[in-house]
Amino acid sequence: MDDKERTNELNRIALKFSEFYKGKVGIMPRVPITSLKDFSYWYTPGVAAVSLAVNHNIEDVFNLTGKWNSVAIVTDGTRVLGLGNVGPEASLPVMEGKSMIFNFLGGVNAIPIPIRVREKEDFVQVAKALEPSFGAYNLEDIESPKCFFVLEELQKGLSIPVWHDDQLGTACITLAGLLNSLKVVQKKREDAKVVLFGAGAANIATAHLLATAGFKMKNIIIADSKGILEPNRSDIDNLMFTNPWKYRLALDTNGERLTGEEGGAFKGADIVVSASRSDPSTLHKDWIRSMNDDAIVFALANPLPEIWPSDAIEAGAKIVATGRSDFPNQINNSLVFPGVFRGVLDARARKVDYDIMVTASEALAGRIANPTPEEVIPKMTDWDLYPEVAASVAYASSQKGFARKNESKRKFLEIATEIIEHNRKAYKTLLDNGSIPKLPEV
Amino acid sequence: MADELKVRRAKEEDIESIADLMYRLKKLNEEFDTHFEVSAKAKDRILSSLKESIPDSKGCILLVGTMKQKVVSVIRAELRERKFYEPPVDVRITDFYILPEMRRRGLGGVMIEKLREEMKKAGLSLLTVEYPAFNVIAKNFYEKLGFTPNISVLRYMERDNKK
Image 1 (tube, chains in turn orange, green):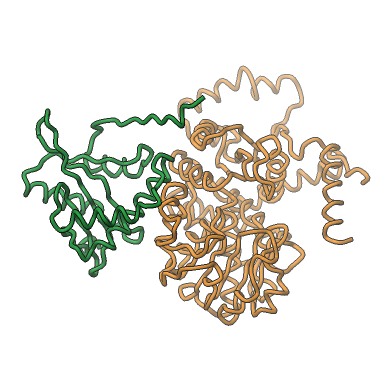
Image 2: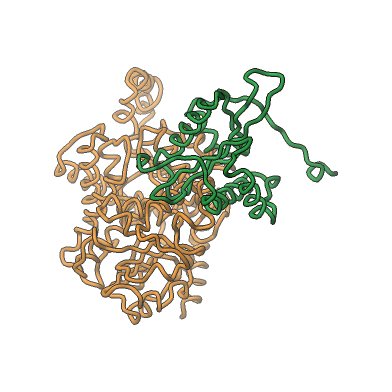
């Protein structure tokens, strides 16, 4: 079966399973209910006392309700996977999938919330109004540059962490992979020349995260279909208004002030992180050849990377990472967000920032004691990874003064491990006793 | 960084550089409104108007910001007569552009300050500015410096209103 046939087969199965299960996640009580009298304290009249307690001290909402473990997955469906603007309803299957991963890997109750809004200001207003129920927000599949505005406004306006996985999750796992890659090729982050190919959500966040982690902004070159990003590029004044995030990077990066077509950015570079067009002819072999010795190539487009790993290696790359599981070094956000959210929720954090993300990336990178060119990124089946990332994030939040709940790192690790394991055991029980029906015949 | 900026009256040798900056500004204005579509003859017209107004600076104040002898910013203000009001002259900023590379360093404030000094020397006190209505960056910049709304200019184009 070739790639196309395999994809078609998976599509057919996905539709059949979705029709059978009618939704990937659900809500179930987490308290004992054995008789009618139980409702008198879980609901009226007893619940009124709980309501008044929260009314008296609003922070008690974290102690007396499920807010501490609830995340909103908010999207407007404007940039879903590689499908583009499919609308909020069509984004729901994807958001449900995300919710499922949140729960399975991080023990987090994540509620899919696709919203029907047109203007970015409306998105912010709706999202702000939902804050009381949630301990954190995960923004998902929002078109660029709207996603930057929404993230920035919500981070400013809310007292819970706000994360945009397409930006921050991708940047975090990319940094983790780069830290181990640099170990393999024995280069220092402060000396590394980095090309960020593609100037969308992921690479704009990656630029900021790399700078926070000790890479030099001046050593980062951003290139896109219009060429190398620099202050004299013809679209620069337009960017000041339409995409100020990209505009600011045009001024801050590219210390050499390279100009011209995108291929020129690669000469002498140590690293390329490509988040661009899903087509293996996007990155030319000549460009890779012009890079420094032991080049590191991250080609992250899905389903097809911007260059096949074999071509990149033939052109001189030492390490290649892609978004795919069938090649070594899969750059996968699912390694990041379950642990990061477990961590910020356990610390009842007020915010998350680039410093916390660097901590998460270092924890992820640290899961591989002796990285090799074929293994710079941990695998999803490294079950200890999620509580480890969670504990690092929770403790860093506490150290930075972002946490409402402060514990030692060891204690945070115990908390995260217990929640994740308990959740997984409960799920397995439902699966084993048939409460969750077995997959139908395909 | 703003200390390294020197602001002075424009000279003849600056004309090419100023024309480039002013053309960039016109192209920027084009982004906001189709009615600022830049004429194909704009470059030539900017050059010829600069040649006329430098060095005498009749009817306008033209200042340049230089850094290491390179012109990095320009501000052009027209002196407009107000026959029926006091004060009788309005100094109207019509063009103000800073090279992207030099932005976010406080140069804008320095340029405006220098313009105000020039106005004081000439006994002028009213400074106004015009820019496309949707240029929020300009609006925020001038408001921070204490500018307040003055007059509104609305437009009506036959081609937009044909049924």
